[in-house]
Every structure is written in structure tokens, then in C-alpha cells.
Length: 165
Image: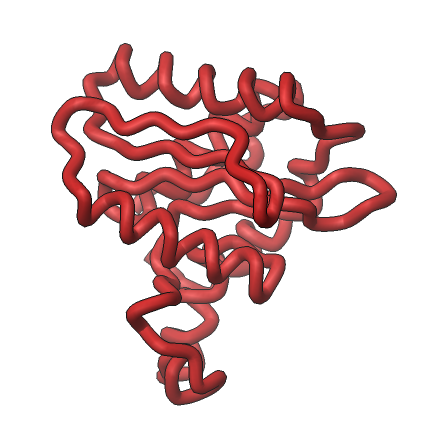
């Protein structure tokens, strides 16, 4: 896997996966699609959809633990702080060979630069929240979120997904 290629593709995902508007019904549909897909695939994940400071959808499926809840919180914090996907921030760290703590002084207990949290961006408004998944390997968490965002926004997932490992 080429981290630089993934980093560039994630930037493209973030540019393309923009909502024309985002309300509580949109949040519900996003969370519900994630939950339905996870149930169909028997995936043990926690799902969180939020506007910053306002939880809008939450689900913990069979097989998850309280640790997944903590991962969600920490990944959400990364998106709230940097307005980038948690996976992109993590890849940037790896490319620079540094940590969020060393670079920003942010405590690892509150920030996780692992895949699974993606910014909710609204055209004309910018990043207003995040959608987060925890329970799978980090690249798979990220890709599940991107796949469902593509479904909801009617984008071609095949053209936006990360290259196979």
C-alpha cells in the first residue's frame, strides 16, 4: 500500500463527498444505511453521526465493546480539530514520521489518527460534523464510511475508493 497515493485519494474523497444540505433526517439516513450494510455483512461496529456538539445517530452492533466507543470519540475529535478524515491525518503523520502528540501537543487519550471518521461537509458551509465507524481494521472503517457516503450522495464508489491493498 502506497501511503502517498492513499493520502491523495482521501483528499479527492473529501472534495467529492459534499452534501448539498445536511439535517437530522440526512443524519438518520446516513446512520441507517451504515447500520443496514453492517448488519448485512455481519460487521461488529459502532456508528456515530454528529454535527459538532450534537449527536444525531448512534448504534453499537453485536460484537462491539466499550473500547470501540472510545475509539469513536477519539476519531471524532480528530475530524473536529483538523476538518480532515482521521485516516488522512494518520497517514500524514506516518509520512512525516511524527505523532499528533509530538506535532500538535494533543493527548493520545483524546485523539486517534486511525481510519474511520470522515468529515461531513456541506456545500457553502464547510465541515459541520463527522460520521465515524469503529470495529474493523482502520482502512476498512474508513472505506465503509466512504462507501455509504457514495451511496447516499450518488457518487461512483468504484472511482473513489482506495486502491486494493
